[in-house]
Amino acid sequence: MERNNAEWITGMLEARAVELEPYAAYLSCGASRALESMVLVVKGKRGKAEEAGGAPLSGRDGAALQSAFMRLGWENTDGGAHNWCGVLLTPRGVAPLAADTLRLLIETIDPMVVVALDGQAFQAVSSALLSRQAVAATQQPAGRTGQSADGAWQLVDRTQKPVDRTQSPADRTSVRATTSQPITWSPGKTTDAGGRLLVSVNGFEAALGAETDKQLVWKQLKQASRAEVLKRFK
Image (tube, rainbow, N blue to C red; front, top):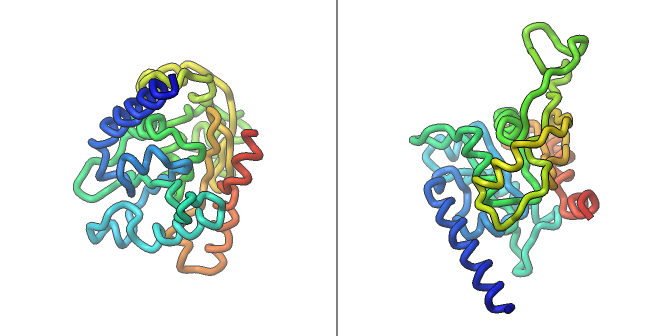
């Protein structure tokens, strides 16, 4: 029985790895490592390394995240922080990643934490996992329907319904999209969605060059620590 279960899990992971192969240009790691990742970071704007043709998160932000996730408790038993992977929304030479595709990648990788590294990533993750719902008119600045003065969106969670993990990612996405649990997620803040923690950081790579900004994004990123996640979902 245990052997049958192990074979089923292996087969499932191999099938999901195949599903990730067409999106290799968007990922900072290989499919096998992506499927082992507890944290998925999403980057919107290309940095200097990506502009020069480098892989996603191959610049100083990737090195900084590697160090940060080790400090935040996501290291593996071999001492390396391999429990995270990154998605770049806008690699050179390929079309920007659509919201539906981002949602499929998140469902396929199935992380415990999704970190939006900049404003573009925040909007993309919101569109992928959540649907906008109008905020009261008194909260709306002129010309920004549904968005409050502090940048928060009143959102409908499309991922709250518990799902059968044996389903394909596409089927799980379809099931989760039928729910309508209202929540709020703001830039620089966290929220829970479908048993995942969503974390927003105010421009991670840009902040690395300024000590004050670096301290702010580190404070925001600490909300994605392993201890914090286990406390929230125990």
